[in-house]
Length: 52
Image 1 (cartoon, rainbow, N blue to C red):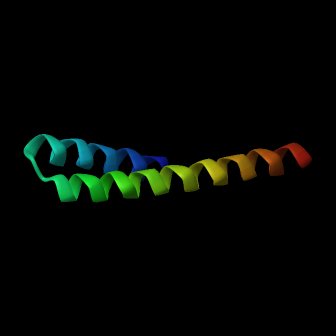
Image 2: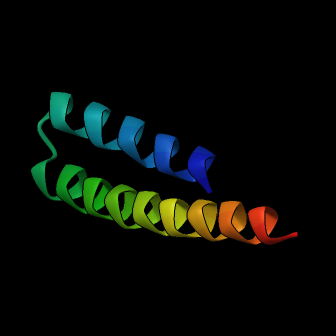
């Protein structure tokens, strides 16, 4: 999940440099959503591991 986030951030940066604002905004939005999903799953994994 984190690898996909980094991929979309790199796409957003390259698209922003080349002047593709719409693509950069969309890729940044997707990266943000994936990052928050990653954080939630990571915290749930930590809590589950602590209860065992």
